[in-house]
Length: 107
Image 1: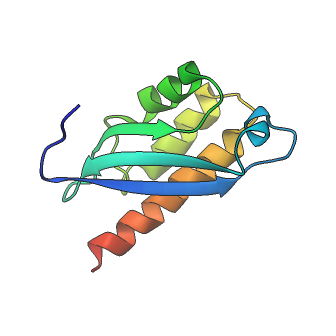
Image 2: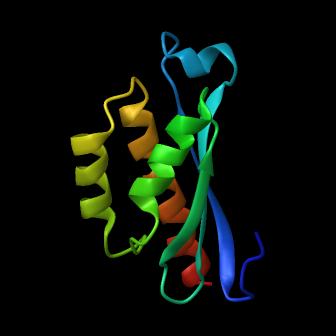
């Protein structure tokens, strides 16, 4: 997929619990978010889950939201729809990506 020139990639990371299946493969959870630079609208995302269907599901939740203004709605939807062991880690990684995006905007 080719992304427009006005998009940026922001990576959020978080620690995962040792009993989570992700821990067998990775030391951290990451969520990469592609968004429009000015509006913060999420265009695409990826994450290092064990199964592609999980990454696709997280993506289906995120795409279309605005990373800065819609953070509470994003978190609420994750809590309502994603009951994987990594739920807290996913939320933490999204918050980390949001913080990095805020730093980029303030430059």
